[in-house]
Image (spheres, rainbow, N blue to C red):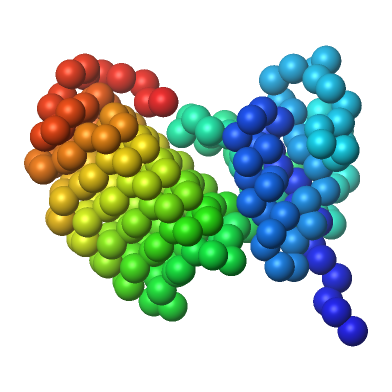
Amino acid sequence: MDSPETPLLIFGARSFAEEIADLASEVPGLSVAGFVENFDPDRPQTLHGLPVHWIDDVAALAATHKAVCGLGTTLRAPLIARARDLGFEFIPIIHPTARVSPSAVIGAGSIVSAGSIIAAYTALGAHVVVNRGALIGHHVQIADYTSIGPGANIGGGCQIGTGVFVGIGATLIDHRKIGPVTVIGGGAVVTKDLPARVLAVGVPAKVVKENIEGK
C-alpha cells in the first residue's frame, strides 16, 4: 500500500507562491493543500482551485500539515516566525530533477528548484531558496533566508550571509565571502568579497549602493 501524501501549506499567495506550489506538486510524497495569506484579508478565497486561508485561521492545521514559505523576498523571516508560533513545521522542498550531494545539508524550509545542483559538503541554512538551474559548488555555506536566482553559479568554498539576494545568472568565483542582506544584481560577476548591506552590480561586480534593507 502506498504511503499517504503529506499535505503542504504554502505561506504566501502571490506569484512566487504559485511557482513553489507547482514545484512542490512534483515532489513525491507531498500534496499541496492550499495557501496562507497574511497581507490582504480580502484575498480571493481560492487560487488554482486550492483554498487561500487567512493566517489567523490556520492554527488548527498545524497538527496535520507541513509548511514552506512562498515569498519571493528575502525579508520572509516575520511570516515564517508567525507560522512557527502557530505550531507549523517547515520542511525542505527538493525537486526530483535537482541533484543534491549526499554530503550536503539542506535546512528546514529550504527550496531546491528544478535542475539545480548542490555539490559536495555544502550547507544551506533554513529557508534558503535555490531557484531553477542554479549551480552551488562544493563546501559552500549559505545562511538563512538567502535567495539564489535562476542560473546563478556559486563557486566552491563561498560563504554567503543571512538574507542575501543573488540575482539571475550572477556568478561568484571561488571562496568569496558575502555579508548579510547584500544584493548581487543579475548577471554580475563577483570577484571580490562584499560587505553587508550593499548592492553590487556589473562585470566585475562593484558596490553602487550602501546601507540597503535587502530585496
